[in-house]
Image (cartoon, rainbow, N blue to C red; front, side, top):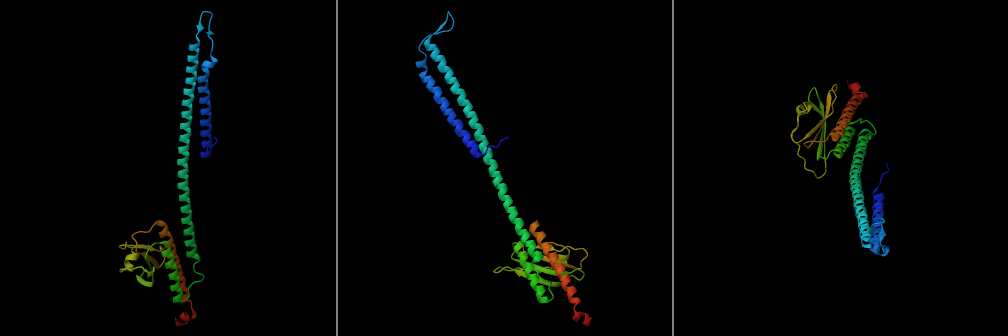
Length: 256
């Protein structure tokens, strides 16, 4: 079936209107000129003669009936065209809305891809000193604040067996007030909710350390949580590599 776009429907409506006006004009002209054409009696049968007035009246009635039927057909066709136009406008509005949503989704996906790329490609080398490790945590925390709209983020590396803090970094936005209450490692390790804050942790069953990120928000959405948890895993891996490299240094081996 051939699809009729808005322009085709408009052209069809104009043509229908034009043809209707021409036809009605011809019919009305015929009605007006009927007395001119009908000038004599008509012999229907040998015994019956139709008077001139009767013939004129009958022809006028027939022409008016034709004009009425054409008017009805014209109105019916116009109604169909209007319904198609409204349906096409509604479909066009829905498609525009879906297209806008698709562009927003694609834009969001592109942002997430950039964030994921920055997570895995943000560091050119593994940290070998405490200062380099601190700089790495700064980069990761700033990336998190780019993902989650929060005033600050707390990164804490916890030893699970002793529930002791191994490393901690707090990053907050400029000109933002900081209201950080006591957050216990025991509560974090148990996965207990922290009042007014959101907690994201690295989840590895066979690891002796845990990386936890705390945000001053009641909730974060699923996409943000996935990205932040990925960063937590990266930090955990990075810290384990840092400790392993530290233990394998000649100074450490000589002292041990």
